[in-house]
Image 1: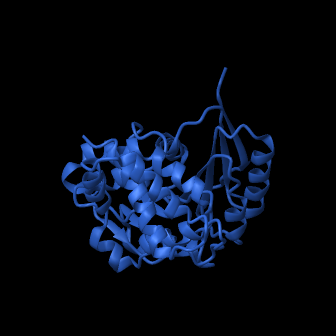
Image 2 (image 1 turned 135 degrees about the vertical axis):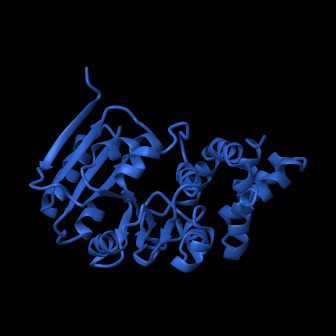
Image 3 (image 1 turned 120 degrees about the horizontal axis):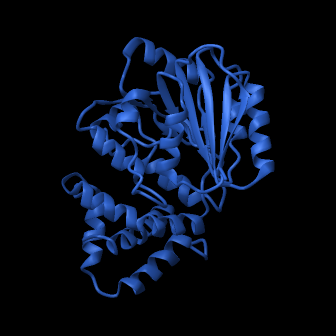
Length: 309
């Protein structure tokens, strides 16, 4: 019995120039789809439900896709493939000359977002280009304030600054790639769970292609609360260890690796972790945000330390 179903929302009349690819898992990407408004010609949407097991969620997505007026289909997976495998599956389904990855919780910042990408394809023809991330449309709440500060301080950078560390500053959302190049250089499916499959991919492809950084940002609207941030940082530990073993020279330059290496040699890591966790949560509401951010980075690095060779 097949564990996958493909729903054709609107068939394509011609071969598209760009395939917008979005994996989602228990998160409704309808807000992102509604944000596009009128979709330019030459664009198709391919979404993958990565094992959410929710008919209501799929129905919402199908309705939102239909309203774009663009060629679109949804792949419904009966099992959770994970971030790397889901992206590879989407690429295999894409018909466009280029693919653009957008996470389900992203919101394009400019009305002409897709037209800008199409223009970059036509005038510059990059193999790989990253448009950048922002918080322009994100809602900062008491629960998401820590993530807002962390993300704004590290992930929201102008193109010229990102270009200085082109691979490390590349994420797998708002990422444009020539489809044939991506088929030849897929995401490493050994990266399971949370985190670093995009950094690994970027470090790999930077050896053979330029990663162009441009200004065409999208907002990361799905900010996490502190509990979710901490859970994800713990889950990312094994992948960080894998990244460090696969790219030892490059990863040793990462600030997170330097901190993790120092913490690995320190005693009483569990006690330190409890202190970092308490400060990051700031249950009394007294700690300055810079202190909370520093505590969270130490907590995150302590998880990474457990998986360094």
